[in-house]
Length: 173
Ligand code: FES
Ligand code: FES
Image (cartoon, rainbow, N blue to C red):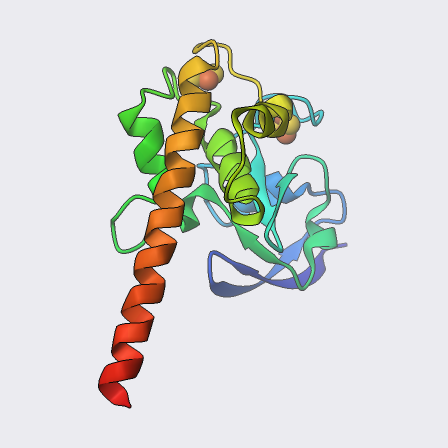
């Protein structure tokens, strides 16, 4: 018997009927057609299915869709704004942090979650965070480089946003 769930996905409120045994990744891909979230193993090993749940990186093959009731989910499709890539996506592109790209959405989601909580993450922190994200192509070197460049880009974007907010507060004061 299907169960109704309500949650927020990439900033949009969603209410849907899901089967009790449906995984969150199946719900995202099959019902919401957010196919940027990949399935590499569905046994919580590869990290290709990583999304943010209430701001934390989680493997969406490792929880049921019904467990996401009331949650805020961000997928790779929710990172870019108005057609502009997120700084972490841009850094993966600049640093050639991908080859086939299958692991990349999960890598980017893990990386952004790390930098949101640890803006000054070191190379060792990045390697630790990406421990649960497997890549069969790149050898990881350029991925780590990309995450460090992406972290710098996120800090700079956040500084610019604060400066813009301060300037607009001065204009309206
Ligand atoms: Fe979820 Fe591999 S598909 S960890
Ligand atoms: Fe191919 Fe990582 S780029 S699996």
